[in-house]
Structures are given as structure tokens and as C-alpha cells.
Image (cartoon, rainbow, N blue to C red):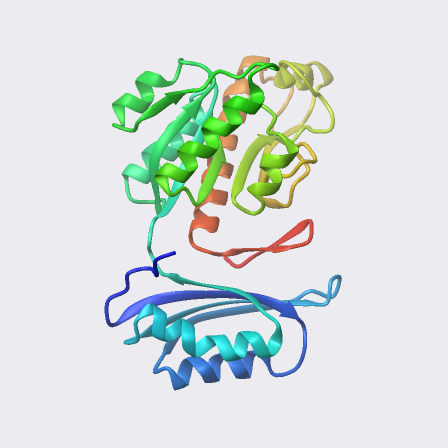
Length: 288
């Protein structure tokens, strides 16, 4: 794999995790200092539940990517770190999957176009054609990949081909109403984000907001999480809730829910693209 392109004076983001032990921060910051780095932001967390240490460091240095990476390798090896070095601000290649609902997809496309989300969107994949015009409006290639029980494996192979051809780093399920296979979920561990309403496990199935309205709920919301084989139970990145009351109609709950879903998904995608989310088992550490 080719190294990221970095000009002299580039900003980088280093993320790492390892067993919590003395001397990690000192070793990392010392290595960055020796590499001529100026640390502009540093956050760390030691998980008492798992005994793991997590760190995110933003640093400016005149070194190229390969040089900086090489200077950090001995420290990473010495502490048994899982780590990544990113060129700060580089857009993350992001494939969006959607079905018929446009709200989450539209929010992501608008925010990306306006420069708010540091992602590139090389393609949109849908199992229906309803969103083709929206993709065309933003000038993004649209791939119609129908999915049935008989064609699911073939459809996922098509999806893999698109990901490989486009150099996709992140997959976002923007109200994509298909369950990914266990195999594909495993392949995308930590690289696929889904959104769903926060009523789960209650009000499953069709028309969840109407079900919630019939029960007189007082809070609605959304959850953005990484995709796992356990449906809608992956590590949570972001959640939002808003209060409602008896005067709201079911249709108003649907509209409010769509707004929350769009904001929550966009926030999760932004934090991921800025390398602020680290996995801690079935939980996340989010440095924001």
C-alpha cells in the first residue's frame, strides 16, 4: 500500500491503544519531540473495565509520513500498541448505502459538499432507485444493486467490488434497509457505521414512530454505531434524544425522528473521519 502523501510541515493524527502501563505518554511524546514534532492536541484514557490505554495526538512536524512512521515504530513495538498514523484533514473515502429514505443521505451529501464532513463520497449504493435523482443532483455515481434472499451473496460481492475499485475506507448505512451478512460485518469491523431510532429493542418492525406514538412515548432519539453481526448492537458512537409530548402527531414524530437521525449519523461520521473513535471491545472511546 502506498504511503499517504504529506508535504513538509504537515499535521498528523496518531491514534493508539495498548495494555495500560507506566510510561506510555512519556514514550510517545518523547518520540514525537525527537522527530521535531509540535503537539497541538493530546487526549488519553485508561479504561478500568478492560485495562487498556487509549490515546489520540495531533502533531505538526517537518518530517514526511514514512519518516514519522518509522520514528514511532520502536515505541509502538515496545508497548505492544495497535496504532495508526493519519495525515490530518485527508478526506476519508466513504461509500454510502441507502434504500428509499432520503433524509440521512441528503444530510451527509450536503455536509460533505459544504466542507463540514472530511469525507470523499465516490459512490452511492442502493437496493432501490428512489434516490438516484438525489445522487445525480450531487454528481455522485449511483449503483443500483437489488437484494433478494436468492441474490444476497452476489449483491454483497458486487458491493465488495465497488469498495475495492473506489478505495473505500468507510461504509455508512444511511437508512439502508438490508441486513449485512455476518461475513461482511466481520470484514467491515470498525469501518461501517449504521443509524437507527433509539426505540430498540422496543417497537421493532414497520412504522416504529407510529408504534411509539400509540404508547405515548415522551422521548425519541437515534443511535449511530459500528456495524456488527449482532443486529443494531454494535459499539455506540453517538446518541441524541429529544422530548415530545401528547400534542405531537405520529407524523410529527416521524419528521422529528428523521432530523435527529440525520444529525446523529453525521456527527458519528465526522468523529470517525477525524480519527476520534477507538474501539474498546463492544464500547467506544470518543475523543471530542
